[in-house]
Image (cartoon, rainbow, N blue to C red; front, side, top):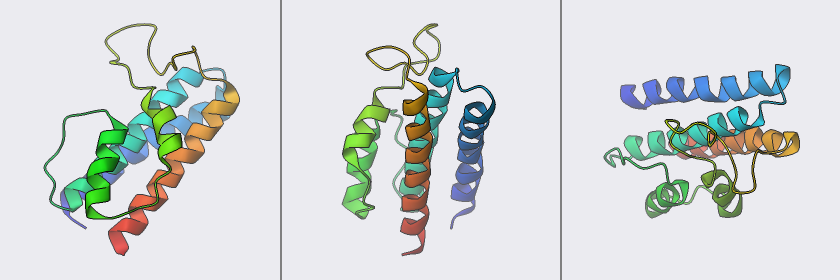
Length: 131
């Protein structure tokens, strides 16, 4: 694994750790949990692309990133879940939208699902590095 990719993985682990910690101690902050899960997913996907010599793509669109990944290797990423998580990213410069779904703030159950899905992406990407 490239040093730059190792740095990305360490960087992304912070988002996943934050999401898990907030879920454990502050479940009511579902929008923040969701945002960190979206960010973790995005960064894991970008790390995979960088490892495979694809220049860094300046996008937050998880569907687009997955399309680039599929051209390299099928990682078995569930696009239905990805579409839901893709709706979460809103530029954090705008208050009120951070980590929100179109229907409003995620439920605690949705936040738990987002954490699990971010972990699934991590596993898919890490397996993709080794196979």
